[in-house]
Image 1 (cartoon, rainbow, N blue to C red):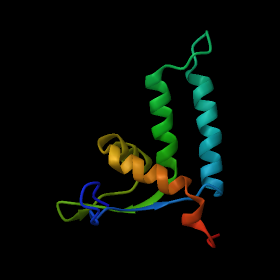
Image 2: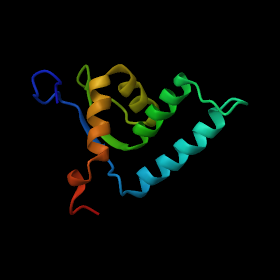
Image 3: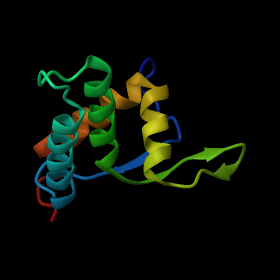
Image 4: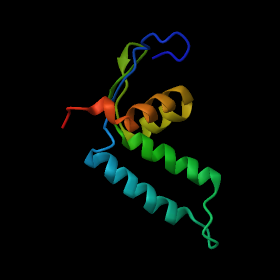
Length: 108
């Protein structure tokens, strides 16, 4: 939804819930990536933390319907990361929805 008007933007994302195997794998990959990003002192830079966070959030998006110049935009992980980097308001909505157990009530 548009962050100001609340109206649909034409972007539809398919997002997995917090109890999904996909999100569980994403969390494990996040933990591994943070360990790999840590320097010899065990500290992970803010830039690396943000990169890993966005990568993890992107793994929660498993499909989309987006068009650009009237043509469908191909779905892939790199494109999801690019969308999340370009629009903080999309990040916030994806993060909120992916973590909201009530949004997935009654779904397998």
